Image (cartoon, rainbow, N blue to C red):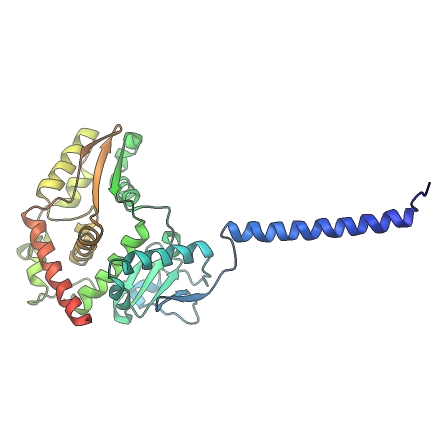
Length: 315
């Protein structure tokens, strides 16, 4: 009977260990690829649209935005790239690809919010928002609770329900493009001061009072902040559905936001048949919160006419 020497055992052991290491390396590589944690990129082009990670040596936002932008180089993860491509697909599938051509480029940046740098025609996207997991209805709940922290205690009993389920990143893209449209087509002043002209005054007069220095006619923010109970929230949302001229909880932040949100929800309704409802204790108690009323119909007609002109221009 042959007995292997210690030297033979050591060699065989070494070979076996190398084989195991190779197998382990291949397994780890496959796991990384499948988990979406592959290589990061500084930029990519998809369907002709340029997306870049912020580079302080390359990108210089306008002064009014610069202080809120972290001077940090941003690399795009596979998950972020997937999210951005998905939103491009969602727009392209509905013949809205031309909207993505308004900005010169999209830059992903570390900032507290996304913004349209109108003078440069560049959209900057907050890197934390570049995902597919946070939906438009999640954003509604988040904005409601941020505006009225007193509702936090009851927040487990209610939520908003969007149909179909769409990523909030899609809404953000359309919203920021809306700001570029209002700047380029409607000549909205980009520094906050409203300068009326025949192109924009028709829209602005629906919700904003010239005699009170272009203040919100509805006192929307005060109504939102004054909610003190679930009953009060239901009353507010009922009023919002039936009487408000605005399309979202952030529309009343200013005339520019009003237009951008009307632009968003015109696109979402017209091309995705999107609706949002309020669910309390597992039951839909208010459906279609953005149902047309006489004020919203005026805004929708305004945006529809603008979009028709844009479609004709892009044919």
